[in-house]
Length: 135
Image 1 (cartoon, helix red, strand yellow):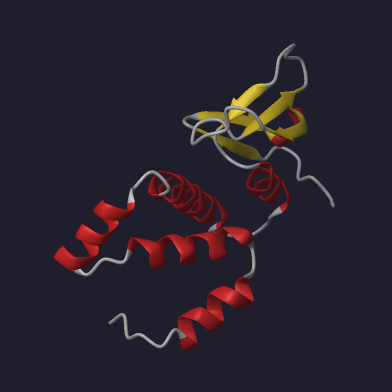
Image 2: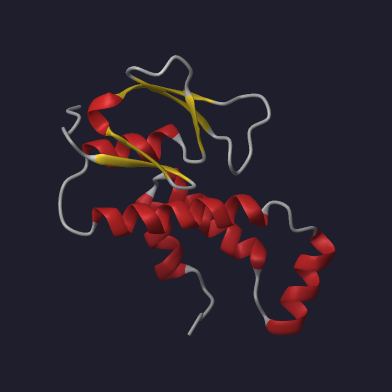
């Protein structure tokens, strides 16, 4: 896998570094949360920077080419953040939201998880054959 030179990589929450300076990623295991997903080691810094994005998403940014990739990265980061936040919505509130306005947070969370897992086939099949008309 080739790392693109001079590509700005978003670490989340306004942190950006050049791809040339990033030397490693380590997933955070303890106290992991929306703003604490990955330790990013930067050439010249004695301590790792804490990123709110996963190592796979940042690595994707460093190796992708083509127009629209920055917007795609921002959209994926938003999906990651909303997915993490949805995990804090309890079952009573989920039921209330579903009954009040028809918004099924369980289904949305499941679809986000599929999208973030990188399994495009599952996302496409679910969208085509989900059984429910969303329109």
